[in-house]
Length: 125
Image (cartoon, rainbow, N blue to C red):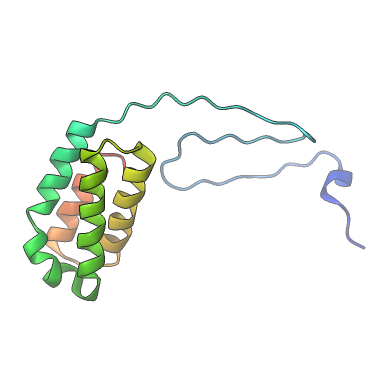
């Protein structure tokens, strides 16, 4: 017979988070409640633009580095650059840069890819 998790009483449950985490709330032992989170995060648009422009210097090598994913990598980089120039929300910019990071992580060993990952790391991506 299955027991409802709420009827099991107090228990110890673990939450494992790998990598960098921010703006996370965990609420336990409550029913019909809510939380509000105010996040004051300053996004350095100038630093971000400097880093994506550095990455853009290697666009001519994207075909060799990314292979069949070169178009996706280039489009994602352009999206990030435009977002930074328009001062879009940091979430939108970080999402584009995270996609670029994911594409880059799938590349086999490449000096350019390693450099791009290092630059993205400077932005906390």
